[in-house]
Image 1 (tube, rainbow, N blue to C red):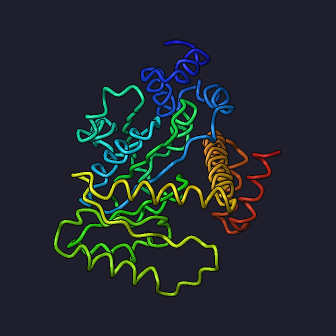
Image 2 (image 1 turned 180 degrees about the horizontal axis):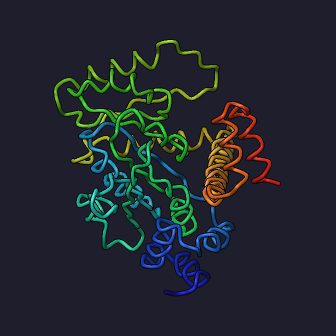
Length: 317
């Protein structure tokens, strides 16, 4: 394999194989990962990240593919991160690179990658933040993150995207499900897909009503629009892109974009820190100090909080 500096340079030139290799290093938590992230840092923070979430069957893959087509018409380089359920056998992405997106496979300005959740709750792979950084550093103007449809835990997409798109479809009880799952709160743009079906208007009205319940927005606050699409035929997709661009503009004008990205970076740093601490705790499991603390807790001579404080002092001292 080429060295990290060469791979990063090739990724910056838009070479798909180099981008794929870098994301593989991310997924495998390879020893070179620190060097990869350090090399990409100067090139990150430029891409506009859009997350698409919703129940299974609403047409996320079809909508993602339609958005790729629309953004390519605008001359944008597009990255797609499709997060799939893990294969119980190999741990890899069960669906692979989405069949419905293969129309873009020969376009050098489109990079599509499937990642396995590997049991991670929230619909996103633990490696997703670093994979997004790779696509960002590779010069993608827009990155579309499509999450696995796992219902209530999909709210994690809000932590990874500049704009969160929630997809619903008529006849699936999605309005009620969305309210239960808490994704009404995280949606910046709502899409009623398969709008050629009966009940599409009713679904849009129900959604609009739910969004208005308890609404306490101030003047200048963003009010999520509801866009009706038939993604399989490309209908309404231009209106969806327009809604996304308006939200992107609002984020930039109000300073919310910087706030969201700072929050995202803080969560990423926290996750890496916690992973490092867990690794050190694992190293201490055979350590006499931890064993002595555990013994005192078990005997009732020390409470677990004080024991934890002492362990933290040991780890950070």
